[in-house]
Length: 588
Image 1 (cartoon, rainbow, N blue to C red):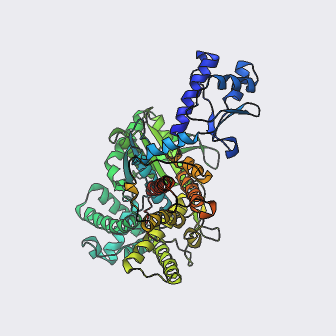
Image 2 (tube, rainbow, N blue to C red):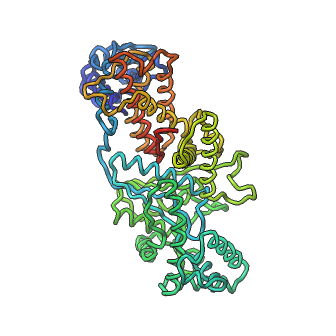
Image 3 (cartoon, rainbow, N blue to C red):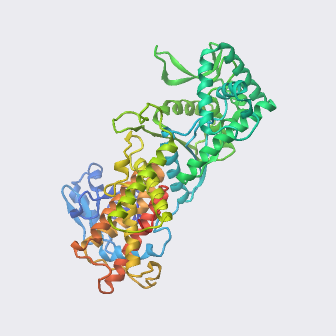
């Protein structure tokens, strides 16, 4: 709820008490944005909800509320419509005051969270010895956007990268490299990531086909877990090689995340099993130690167990996830823990969350949230793959976006007969290419699958990053053309709203706080994308001379007022896009 709605809500609550008595204190006025601008800006539906309780017709209740409602400083005279809707239209003078107030605020009127807290965002999570692929795209981009928004709201955010850096795959890989490339286990940078991935695939094939190799690999895992010096050294080299490649991707995406992989929790795993045993939850089933779950059954309809220790004494992902969850609560003191993974893991999270709750490890003031997302699909509607059917490497996908962005830019420069430096072209191509990929993902409701299309995401029209970036650059062009410094328009300069498009734009600018507050709670970045897209459309309507709103040619005081509106729009776009992890460009 934005600041204006908050003010109106307080006024409504006072009117309800004045009209019907103290028992009606705290009754929700059900204040929503009007579905049609011709009815006003907001609509209160409380009269309909109180009809049965008061034994009166909704219109009579609405009339009684309006008689006691003093919003004359905010709204035009109120109207009662239909069966009892109370329609409210904001006064132009009120909008002008609100905009003049946020003009001097670096946060553009967005208040920080009332109760800031430690929040953890667990995202990205690639596997060591494997390249990041298109499957890591959504977790990385969505997780980063969520972390940025929570940080902006004043929360103490811990960004964690729960990388797969432990377990059977390392025994398998180290064993294979001992045979074919022992130098890689003793010398830094002996392999690049492509070679490492290739060796991993060959190791997996041999592991699946060769029982002797399989047993040797298992013994190597035992050596790893026991801390054997040569095995640990080899493991560290393999991890570091992968990290170097991951960092190239993170730098390109401007994503910052702290690695705390599965290996970090290895020493805590025996304690997890012991504590579950002490709590009476642990059951031995076919030699494995399990916790049986409520509401989960196998194909035969029998209760499904969550295995926390395998028959060979090893541990599962669930054991590590339980250990990490407990560590994050007890040591990190997190109050909200957010896991950004694909929707296919929903059952896994529901299961280990349930075990943690049964064990009494989750205090009442701690919230666990799984943030699921759908698949990235190709334009054929199938899972996004290369032509050969392989999973698309994330590095290749980003490089291709930048290359296509550069080609579009060079074609536009040639058409406009414009000369630019190589540095300018490289920067714009990278910013637009990466932004296009990010925005195409974030603008979708994350719970849905989406179709990956370079042509659509790089389009200068429609709900795309280039469209947003162009709107921002257009405003900076006004500054350059008029030799105007937006920061020096004068402390006493005021906004005067006269044209209908100015009023529409002004109302949109004042919605930012509500949008960010909503995303802070529901963790759906597409809501912010939708807001920014609508803001761009309203700005372009305001900017267009056909609608009679010249800016640089206008007489004072309208000229300065319209320049302030331009500046507020640009600052809102820049802030919103930065919260999505997208840089802006002064020129395109």
